[in-house]
Length: 397
Image (cartoon, rainbow, N blue to C red; front, side, top):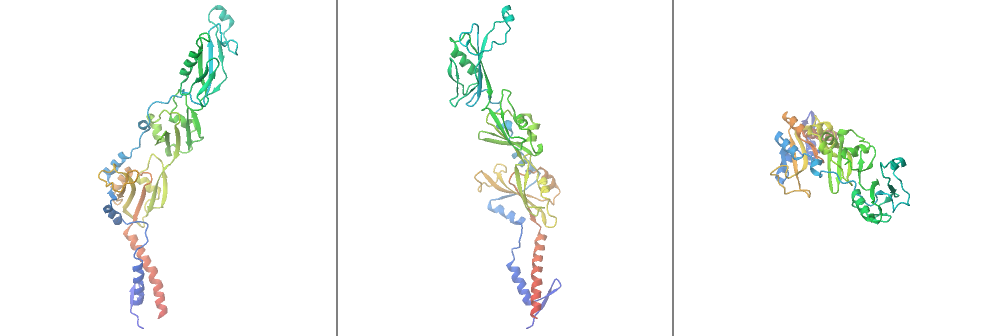
């Protein structure tokens, strides 16, 4: 049998070897890769997924659309009334009678530490005060006062409770005066959890404690201030802002209300890096946000040996209102549409745009391979195929 040989990269390969090479290459036409090519991504524009080349104007428009809602805009101004009593609070009730005391004269009382000399001089008229044992407001929202009976206190402030007890004692006590104090505030409090030194419950007082007061009561944060996000949960409303913003803007240091939950979060957001980047990873970042330039730096930049600098993409589910004219046919249950933002880092101006383009939570950063990298993979595959074939053909001679 005669063999006709040809030369491939300095190697002699027979006709049979060439047939084997062709069969292998044909079977391996789909070369391995880390993701789609730029052309493949651009082709998706025909399927309803919008692909937008990012310039300075688009980056500025997106920055305005993604500005966070402020606490001062979301939550109503004014603190809640911390003096409103609820079941579980502990109250202390004191009652004064003008002399001569006729109702509470026989019970343990404090004469107000008025000296007999002052009383004899006529400078002051001693009165009797009776302080009752502290009482826990029961599940029905009442406390018991002798001669006044069960008094409904839940949902009232201390002034209203004092007026109610005084009214009930009229005609029984001699010119009664009542003082009610909340000894243990077990219901009007704020809960502070998360990345703080000590998770705690902070009772609210008439002082109207604010957001940073709660953080101080918990001993401050365990992580750097610049990487902490404060989240406030009030009923069904949940909103978050960077701690730095709350410190800089006094309007965001909002008064707290009973039942609020303040959570200190450390880098609560993340994006995913794929393709020809320094590392493929999920990267956490802080709520004050990072730019595309910072995101690329955190994953080691683009791989110089195989990255296509003109094929840097951000995959995002975007609000339809962010980009007018976006086809909303493929919206998610949250009303979002898939959008791919493209950057050409071969253009020096793109680096300025990358500094103003903000990365959002759950973004996917993808860097495509360069065409030369695909060629290199093909040649590597070809060489790994030709060498074994040449050896096999040599053995048959």
